[in-house]
Length: 428
Image (tube, rainbow, N blue to C red; front, top):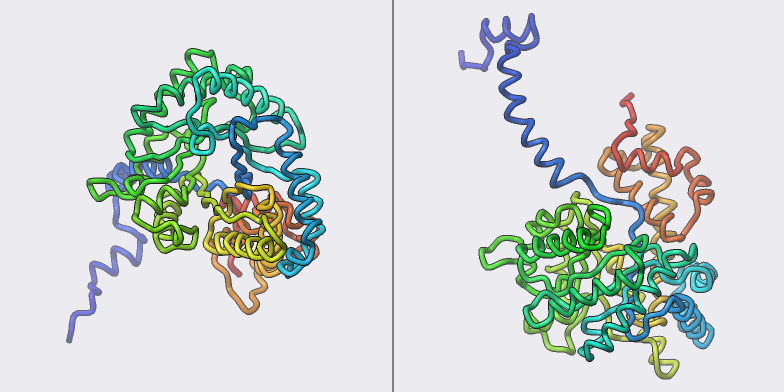
């Protein structure tokens, strides 16, 4: 007869005792697995869902002021009021009342005063003055309960001809702020090598030491504007190594649309967030950052809602489509470069999450109650559904009361437990 893999000895080993492995054997296996577990836990602590802003507003540091969010909100409201038909046409989820409320109450979630491309080169005296003023404005905004949750600067880059100026500006901003404001993060532009990140970490350590700041008080985000930031000379993924080199200080990766596209030889007319070159870079960013706790942020568009009614409608439609496209692809944050972008940012964001909420909440409610239904979800899917709902709540697209009208058992505690994998549902 053919061999079946069973034998008398196998039956005696597994049938009576369950395992023939000795404690020494199990200890040996544990000694092999334990350091791997520790290494994976250190590099991949899990996704950081909750608290991510929907956008980052970039303003030239020459215009730094604590009034910027209110001014942008007022300008965005004026554009909305001047072109109601253009935005009403885009509002397929009836969210314009929510958009208007957001523009009045808290139009900007994340703000950067820009000392790099959006600022240019000025005399040292002028940039020094602007740096101190930016720090003062950031400090005031951090104390404002209606101000941005996140805020900071983009200093000049890491290249030899500009890094001393960038370091000086960062230090003067902190001086002007009187320390590190709540929610402060600085953007590191034009990353080209993972080893540069270790130098940025050293800069943070030196600033903390020199100014008596708490350990790890300074955090930064890496701007991906160079092909070398995605794939290095050795053929490895620079970004994955860069996150490891960041010593837990890197909060996010930001895509730089136009520098990256130009570096890849894409003509100006074709440079876009939706170009295949952009999709490749951003997908690598998404994979490199997955389960590390580092957020990923999409870039900007240079098309702004100005001109006659037809031009405003066309640019608003384009921006709304780009924001929706990004959300559908897992990029929950992007850059806004003009007050008019706030209207379509919030319109597309609110619409996306309001459309997603009823289905996600119902599926999650069924998962918690184990009622089954048309779709039988697994724990990983339940975690993803919880992530959608948390992001929708954080954006302001809906409130917890609306969510519980669909799934009464779902609240913030349950969502957080699912995301932390501390909520388990026993199988029937």
